Length: 399
Image 1 (cartoon, rainbow, N blue to C red):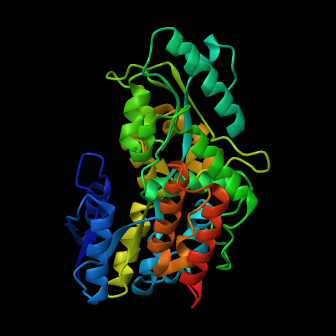
Image 2 (cartoon, rainbow, N blue to C red; image 1 turned 180 degrees about the vertical axis):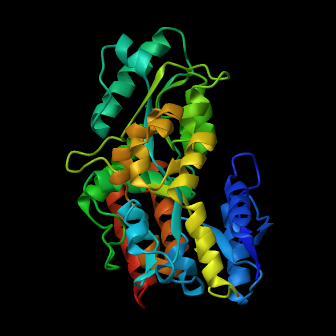
């Protein structure tokens, strides 16, 4: 007997492939889908989900969830390992499966992924005889030198490095990359122990603070992804930290830097390896669904290799199945995909799964203390000490 499955998709714009894939599933199975519109903003979307799930509503069967939500919503989500085989999940990036596993339960399947990247002006590095920096110190020195040269040449608006410094989740992503790539850990480890209060983490934050007003504008303290992309795309920055979506835009017709840019892993500290914070979206099944088996089948279909390949080719989103990074058609549609593979393989997840419901407060504490360092209100050592105490209080009763 045919059933109707309700799925909460993305923003509903042209880049939202979810309704298309869901409709294909309906045509193949003889069931029907109802696409539920959700708010564009992630905070508002999360609030809607918390209301629906908290009331044990069966109105939505499948939910599109952010990478940092499984720990917060996990109690209300079905265990997909009851419906999806280990052979299937083995095709996905292990870090993403781990991220979506809460207390041994697989509560979401990865759909597309993101990771922080370094964009750079290839033409200017060549002009001034520099390689792509491998350490943050090299980035700082190269940015300083080329910024000064470009300003002498008449571009007073030119900056060495553009990053997201506003006090919001994007700063958590940047700061986690700085700290982890200095060998300073990831705030809270997999066992739930608070690890942020250490000298390497402090050094990472102090170095970032030294950029503001030097190689990065004071305005960086209020910049998010789009402001930083605008600076880079208008030809006014040597280096940019951002997500993979920037590549096609910065090479588009409206870009001042089309054909002049490159993309690389982010730099690392003196005692660490390059680390990129993982982003992306996943699909989960509500524990309150009246058709959990069908809902899980829809999730398996949308996250399948075939649908992820179409999503990558048509929309440019990064697959979560490793083999697609060697797929000739995917690479032909976006050659940068192959360069992303190593970055995604070694991506660092935010400590959202281990901290569960407390993650929003953990992230708030982290980005607020980091912002105080960037703005000169605190030094790195004071910030990580205060943050350590704050997180210990939050986790005292167990995450």
